[in-house]
Figure 1 (cartoon, rainbow, N blue to C red):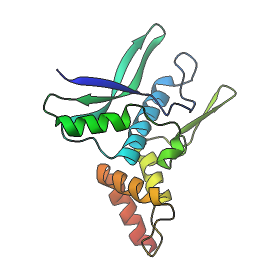
Figure 2 (tube, rainbow, N blue to C red):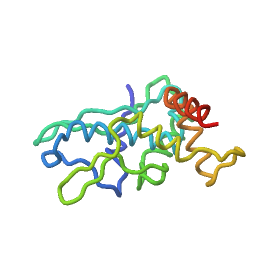
Figure 3 (spheres, rainbow, N blue to C red):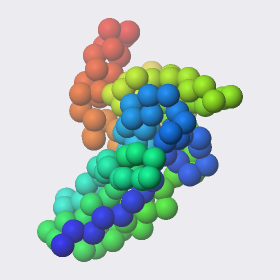
Figure 4 (cartoon, rainbow, N blue to C red):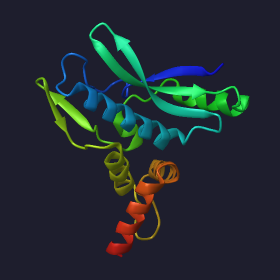
Length: 168
């Protein structure tokens, strides 16, 4: 029987869409969960074989919402799964831990969308964490974040590489 661990909907110390309050809640919640998935992968790498990070629908008195879950199958390597669980179960505190800006910010009850898709969130992080012309990263953590996202999000990495080729 698989193990399912709820990681949350967004970094713990960040504002996020509120069920019953945020206009277009479903879309905002989904974007934040997918961006949070990318943030977890940016910091900790993709889940090992037999594990996956997926949005899961949850039902509440006011409606349904999604949260990010880590699903560990029976086929997962116990040591690899335990190490990944230990790394991700506490989640992240801030979007900046993954070199991300919030995809949506909230002020005075108004949601301001900065990105519309998780793909755009990932591409933005690839751009902001890219190495300098000499191949060096300005901040050591950028090397890890950039490599983890490039490996897990191949389409966005290809889009980034194509843009870099056009600029060079």
